[in-house]
Amino acid sequence: MEPIQEDLVEETWEEVAEFTPNKINKIMQKVGKEQSALLAFIVEFTEDLDQEVKELAIYMFFNVYRMFQKGFGKKIKLISPDDVIKCYESNEDLMQSLEGAHDKFYDRIARVQVSSQPFVMKYIVETLLEPPEAEDAVELTDEDMGFLFLLLKTVVDILNDKT
Image 1 (cartoon, rainbow, N blue to C red):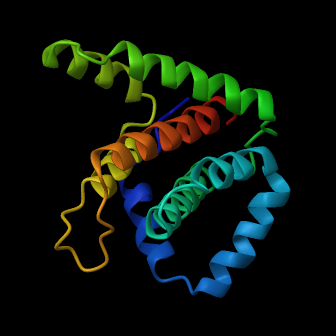
Image 2: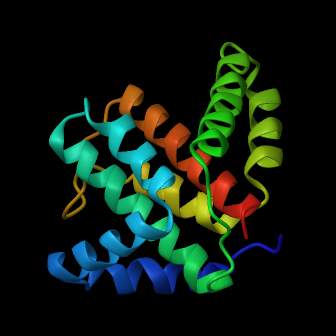
């Protein structure tokens, strides 16, 4: 699958930043009808997080989904709960296998693993690492960052696979 271009990624998050809460809600309802398993995954896996962190996760999910919609149109195949769990477990295993790995090895694996959609992943990483001084930045713990990265990498991998 071709990567979504950097300008489309940037254009999408800038566009979404201008959406009203009402518009986001309407579109999210449509996402829930089109890809209920994927939306349920994000909602369920973030329910125990602090409210601000949960809202950030759902907002980032929304942006990523829109990036794929704009990049590939209506070509996203139906995603099953099994697809989601299989991909999440695979990513979780990868993250656990990298614990304690040498930094150079970790960097090489990370580049290979995120290369299918490098600009979408760049958006995720930059958003998660946004300095707390930024206007509407959410203060994240290292654990929050790692967990949200795992969830959103799973979303990117599944959407990439299903387009």
